[in-house]
Length: 195
Image 1 (cartoon, rainbow, N blue to C red):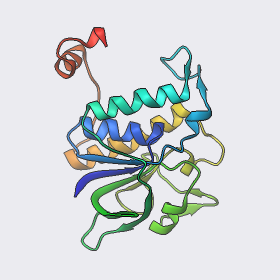
Image 2: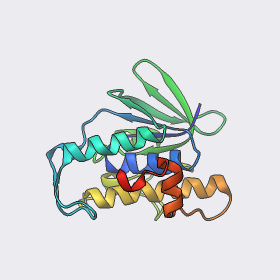
Image 3: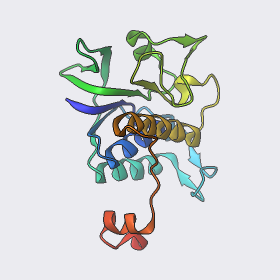
């Protein structure tokens, strides 16, 4: 049992995982490494001058792993269903996992959303502003909820929106993830400027 399972390890999935794990929710990410980022070169991503998409993904993976995210690289999720007692059951070829929340971040592949039974708006998953679907505590991010607006920054923002909504539900108040220099010093042992 884990708090949050994220299916998909692109910008949306890793962004969601970073925020949930960083703020105390045990998070597991299943990633088949099929992200479109391997075809991208980023020079329109805020804070980056110019970076190859594959290099960006390697940095993002190291970052989430440094916070303790259980990153299951190469493990494909075959099914997601609502659990009998709430939460979700997530299946791979070899194992079954349970979580309180699920974040689907599988790009334009909406098969898992279909099997979970979430509502669609045409060909895309119907989500609210927090990326929550019609199934409580299930989120769909990035290209899953957008017909053509596929962009790394948008996807990362969608993942963050889902994570902050999950944290708001868990903490019982509107949750903000806003760090100050002292937070970085605590996280990186006073070496934040050297990172």
